[in-house]
Image (tube, rainbow over all chains, first blue to last red; front, side, top):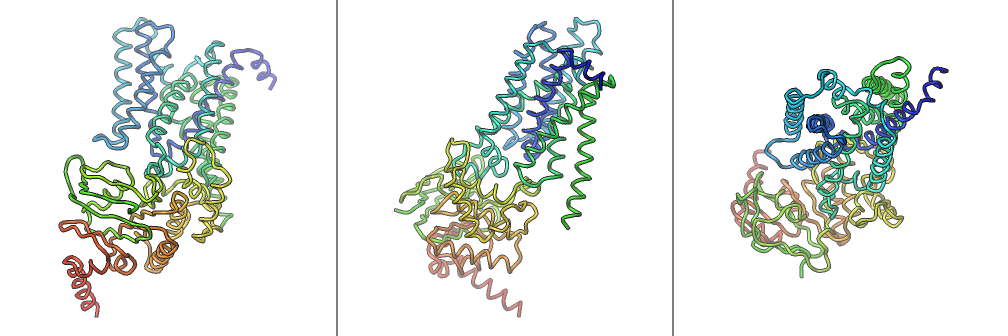
Length: 280
Length: 239
């Protein structure tokens, strides 16, 4: 405990915890919608795109990677969600194609044009999350805070519409709701969250942040509002304890958070079964 | 002027026409059944009526005070809904989304409307239950209550009895007939021609030969007679 208090005195530890909690909160909110819309893998696909974009930015030696990474990821998110409905290549295949393609190109570009001496290390840290969460600057923390507030605000304001469009898109459209506009909005928000989350857990593990809290909450509750709230709370708790454990035990941040998420999922499964048993 | 009038309507996928020169109209208080074989374009017609897709030719006009998004829609079940964690209340309330426009939250008037429609469908006691745990008949009532929140005038029902057992099916038909008697116009897609003839006032048969007219006219028409013969033949085999 005293060790934790000592660590807390360093600003970089506080930054990491703030950013970690915010990212976990945002990613879990939309996770419910993504899981229900059968888009669980979109996080994975988009994060690979973000990795590809990141390597382009690295090769171009850009100081602010966001300028390249964010627009490219948003663009792919829009493409993926749009083609999900009526394209020749169906949703899951499209995601697989884009994600593997981006991953391969990213690595290729980094290899061919690399300026760094520690290529394997660079790639590994981008994929699995790195210490970058512990080296955040004040500016990055603020960016993250502002984007998180925007994401949460959008989610609350459009909560009813997001529910309606997720549950039954045709009905929404027939009732005059602009379902396509909301799908587009969801895609953009997801892309923003993914780019933010890359700092925390790395490209390969983002899906876990998106889907595990939602799936855990779905074991326990059976209405949309409770599932959403529960998944947000679970996600924040898991991220917080994951970061604390990783600091104390010296384990990698990203995979520790995911491990805690999996542990929570297992607990929720057991609790869900127990709840059903009692109800009967 | 009728609620919905279709003139020279052509329907199809991409540019391949399935049905053409479709002319019909639906007036206040009508009960129209759309019948036809699989693949004859019933669902495509439904989606066009809902403005979910554009007709390939011709046009659909709404009149008599009906606005385009004032149609209540009862869709067929989708895969997504099978394990969707949503309470009955949340689903019925979402029928009011068209009334909200850009306002983000539902007001007390809309909540009352949702509660009233649940009462009307006899599902008030299911309010906090999870949709995916309900029986097929209960689920249809929930979706019907939601559709009623979206309209006071016209209901479009896509195979409302698909997958229901005979008893629940006849309950469902009675429920729909009841709504029709209250003055709500019903447009229903059905495979079940026998039930269509029992309840409907108008029949639209789409397929190789298109027919539109009242129920009695349909019984006199070629496809109606063929159906009657088939049914009589069917009954003989049963005996």
